[in-house]
Length: 186
Length: 91
Image 1 (cartoon, each protein chain N blue to C red):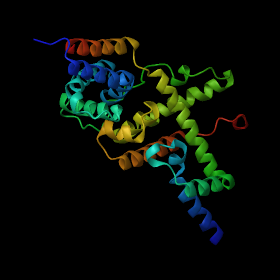
Image 2 (cartoon, each protein chain N blue to C red):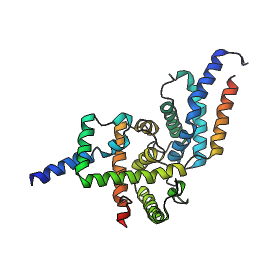
Image 3 (cartoon, rainbow over the protein chains, first blue to last red):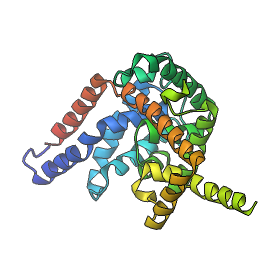
Image 4 (cartoon, chains in turn red, orange):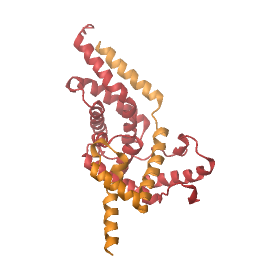
C-alpha cells in the first residue's frame, strides 16, 4: 500500500517532472528522426519516460537532456534490436509534404521558385546520403541538437558526430550546388 | 607559384574550420587565434566566403524543416499526461 504522504516519493516525483517536462518536444523530434515515424516516435518516448521515471533516483540532476537521450537511445535499441542505433530507420521525414520553406516567414514572390527548387534538390541530396551521415545531419541541423546531445542520441563520440556532419553538409552542399540567393544571380 | 600554394593551404586550413565557426557549438569552439586567422582569411578570400554563404543557405533551408517537423501537439499532450500519470501514481 502506498503512503501518499511519503516526502521522498513526493520529491522524486517532482524531480522527475522537472527533468522531463521541458524535454518532451525534443525527445519527440529525436525519436521521430530515429524511428522515421510519428507513431513509433510517440511509443518510443512513452517507454522512455517510464524507464526514466524508474531511474530517477540514480540520476544526479545534471544534463537532463543528455540523460534522457541516452535512455531514449537504449530504449530504441531494445525495441528494435535489429537496427543500429546510429542509423535513421527510414527517410519519410518530410516526404509527401509541401516544401519546408512554406513553414518559414513569407519570402518575396520572386524568391519562391528558387526556394522550391532548392528545397526539392535538398531532399534529393539528403536522401542520397549514407544513413549514418543523414542521421547526424537531421539531428543537428533539423532537430537542432548540440554536438554533445547528438552524440548521446546516437551513442557515438562527439568527434564522430563532427566528422559525419562535416562530410554530410559538404556532400549536400556540393550536390545542390547551392549558391547564395542574391538578386545579382538572376 | 609559391603564393598560389600558400593560398591553397590557407583555404584548406579554413575549410576544415568553417563549420565549427558557423556552429559555435560549446564543445567545439574555435580558439581565439583560430577565429582571428579564419576571419582574416575570409575577409580576403572570395572562394571561402562563398563557401560560408553556401553553408548559411543550407542551414536556412534545413532550418525550414525544423518548424515544419514540429511534433504533433496532441502527441505532446498525451506524453504530458503520461508524466502526470507517473507522478500521480507515485503520490
